[in-house]
Image (cartoon, rainbow, N blue to C red; front, side):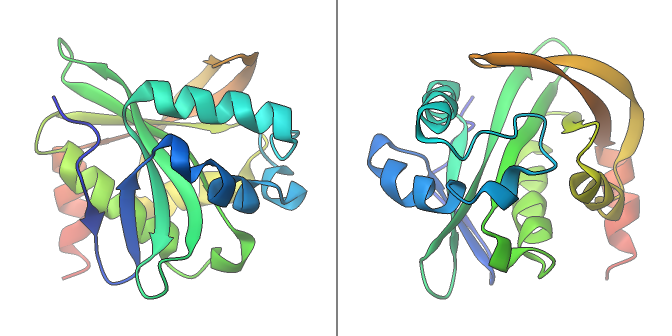
Length: 181
């Protein structure tokens, strides 16, 4: 199953399959310590820590460089991971954006593209959000995701951290998004 389609895009964002050549432009975004202040791994702005994160993203074969659809400027990253064929589920996560794109619809636009793509192939999408990451928890609620509980999550090459698990399934997504029409 292809979890890294060539391009997913809308009026705000383009999702480009993440490649080794994107490291410098993505690190330029990620090197802002304030992006990570609520994140479970607060030092991801440091070069060596970000290199580990980037390696995990490449190995996932589901990561994207998110660019501004109008300017082609790199603005962040997100990825599909932990596909479970038996349960027909996938996870969307490891998402971050340059601060100047916060609160302006870029996260919602990205997630809509990814959710719509995933729900063509699976029935359930999971999201894991750091217990201290209030900003991302609110974003999940705005998407209509249901909070399932707390879980200790492993991170590639980083310590396990407490996260809240959220879920969206096809019925919930259809009901939530029919209000937008």
